[in-house]
Length: 253
Image (cartoon, rainbow, N blue to C red; front, side, top):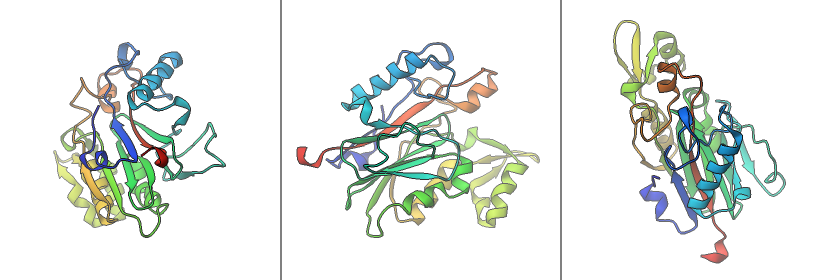
């Protein structure tokens, strides 16, 4: 369990970036796999989510999760849709009390946000596709203009582990030549991509006050699931870690 120093100081929010430890799953999913899209036992995933809720002292029915698709879609949770079972998006935002928002990752960037002025929380799943197609910008548009937003960029794949080909590189250069700063050369055919810095610079440019849980999910195999590591090991599937932010009832604080 990992915590943001910035988010931890606010009494109306609880949050946590969970590792892969402390759950019920076995094999390649050992042990706190919270990826409902994985091929793990659904029963074990439900038990793992109960562990998460227990650690955070929240009711499972108040933890909202997404069907993540590497899109740039954001859903704002309100009283009308809060009981929906299908949030097909890659970011959630809400000002409703007693709700928790969760994002699952296995190399992509989990981002947890809190607007201290308006008491609004958010979570973002930022893979390279979502990030380049403005999932972060679209999420920040859902906050009020006077917002004072704090955010934490959680564990994700590190630059030295994120090897990409020239086609991948060109996707970013077509958008802006300035994106060259996020790449370093490995050889004539390969580069390394700094996803954390790419995402972080976007947040900073949008006036978000930022901190980090700075782990490389690929190399920290005892702590985190990793899509790339599982692919390299020729495993049939992979687990997902969960990151959660919760907005408490104001009357209780």
